[in-house]
Length: 379
Image (cartoon, rainbow, N blue to C red; front, side):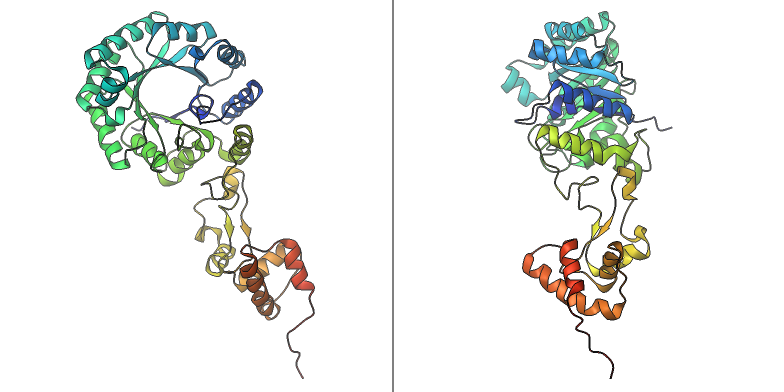
């Protein structure tokens, strides 16, 4: 049977690692409360080793008494784990570089040293009754046999799960599925978490592939914030699970637009109008064929009701509009026109939209409507 999926949102950690992004303590508290309110079960909330101010912020989140489990991110080093303990959290991610590239050229050590480091750090964390996710940095480029060895150490020392990180965002969903499937078969006792980056535009697809292959935990960030091109977006992963996979994550999606706008403002990263799921223009319809289909039955051109994510559909009038869309747009303005009136209006509306290279505003449509009638009358 399929196990329930647990979202571990890392907006407050990896999301804030987006170059130039800083959340105030008040903003972090608001974001954490929002995530908790919609049912996110885990929140990765910071990096205690960064210093006193970061630790104070984490303690403030702990003091909120949220339902969500709070985790902190640490390198697999005892002093950093101690810093997490001092914040009052009961769960940690302890991260190690696991690819030969990073072991040799970043850590300048070898696999044996990495395994020993894991044993020491994980042993210390479990001695202090912490819930532990062992983070495999650059697992996407790591040797699978070595990952199995690390997962076996994780199992033997009581680690709670293994985080498979596509740190560079270089994987494709097919490879992700194959690798996670192999690890699930080989070390079934250890739960797997997937952490995906969007450098090739496949973070959400890779996250879904990992889940379909047997990962139970998945990292997300609101709006896909994160290092370089970002992480898998919370809103995309949840809606893809629901509508592409038929699986629920336990998340109330109705506040997605509200949360996305808040984080966009707090991060000073404007929300693109075409951002999947929550973009302003995702549910706007202009072309004649599509607008006509939407008017007849929204399911013709919408995979789900925009209200599911706090959005609403709209009909816009532009260069590609048809008569049905124009009639519907005017109806939304409280004006009823028939096709006889719509046809000449449509010609002028299309021409104006072409000149202005955009859809027409309500004011412009009203001005067109109020222009003198140009349709010849019957003799």
